Structure formats: structure tokens, C-alpha cells
Length: 256
Ligand code: PEP
Image (cartoon, rainbow, N blue to C red; front, side, top):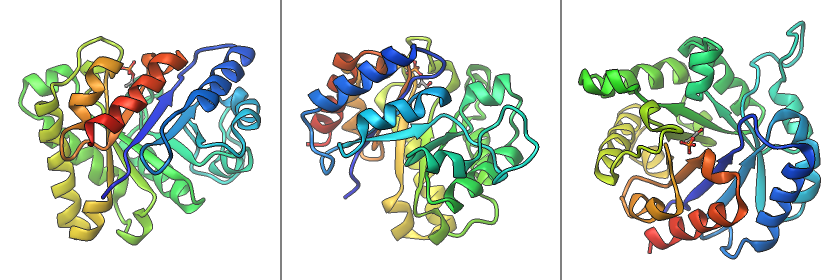
């Protein structure tokens, strides 16, 4: 059985003090054990160390929102996977739609980042998902398949032990529109079958597939009740401890 995971993506929000306080409240009030639901938060880069200090030794893991593929070098403004490990990250989000859109990240760039993150022992959360026009045009599966093959080219199942997929329909991110549990389940199941063809039944069954896109306390339970939905990547609703913790509880409830 897969242990569900709930990850908060804080994007470019909060001050240093607010980030520390939010992490502290989540750590102190979390009432679900890590073997029921894994929990991680991904603050902006400058706050990683401060948040790590607050979370250290507790059940909430630290993640970053991106990382470069090169171990070091002349890449002004970027941060390497080694640096993320160095400041205590266990997770890294790669290929978020906001980076595909605003930083023009390609599937090739994303593939290099995925390999670099896995190579450093990070759990890589690879985001895939279609835009509204792509869904309306009936090409959701083509888009998701292209994103998966581009990002995972050349990787074996064994190398991807630490890989997590986040299915995030772009039209649902930050819009208040959520995919219905049935719609999300269809794509999650497609992703798992795609992985099975590539890496075999065992690897596909172990793969954690998160849903992302306007997840809230009141929709997490029905989403998590779906067979192939193993938790969530949460943006806006991860910026308040109470709501985020309720999402964690609902992820657990949905699997019971
Ligand atoms: C995200 O940023 O990954 C996300 C899913 O955002 P939101 O929950 O705000 O839609």
C-alpha cells in the first residue's frame, strides 16, 4: 500500500518570520503520523534554512520549488540540487506549470533537472498537466505522455525509486476550479498504466501520484478516496496551518 503524501507549495509568498511561524504551527499541530500521511512544505529558497531549523527532528519534511541540473557553475540566480540537500531538503518540485509558463522550461530542461535531483537522492515531484484549451481539444493524454516521456527519458525504474508525479491540470491551479475526483482518477490511472508499460507492475504500483489544483479541506477527502490519487500538491490552501492540517487529515480519511 502507498502512504499518501501532502505537500505545501508556498510559491513566492510569506516573509521569513511568517514562514517560520507557519512551519512551527504545522509541526506542532500535526496530528497524523508519518506512516498514515507524509507531509512536506516547500518554502521560497531564501527561507529554506530558517524553515529547516524549525522542522528539524520532526515529522514534516522540507522541499524546494525548483533546482538546477548542474552541480555548480556559472548559473547566476540558480540553485543546485546539491545546495538543496545541503540545507536539508528531502523533496524538490520540478516542472511546475508556472515554471513551464513563466520561465519557459522545456521538457528537456525538466528531464535534466529530474535526473539531477534523483542523482542527489532527493525525492523529485515531477509536475505534469494539460492547459484548459488542451483539455477542450481532447489532447490531455497526449500532453501528459509527452511531458512524462520528455522528463523521464533514459531513466530506469530503479533510478526512479524516489520519483513522485503530481498531476496538476493547469486550468485548476489557483483558479478555484478542481478536477472532479473521477476526472483526476482517469488521468492518474493513465499515468500509472504508462509507468507500468515502461517499468513494470511493481514500480508502477509503488509510484506516488499526487493531485494538484485548488485542493481544499472540503475536496481532499473525495479526491483521496480515488484508487490512484495518493495525496496532493497544495498551493494557496497550504499558506494557513489550520486549512493545510485539515487537508492532511482529509487525505488520511479518504484512504480509510
Ligand atoms: C500548485 O501551485 O501546485 C497548486 C496546485 O496551486 P493551488 O492549490 O493554489 O491551485
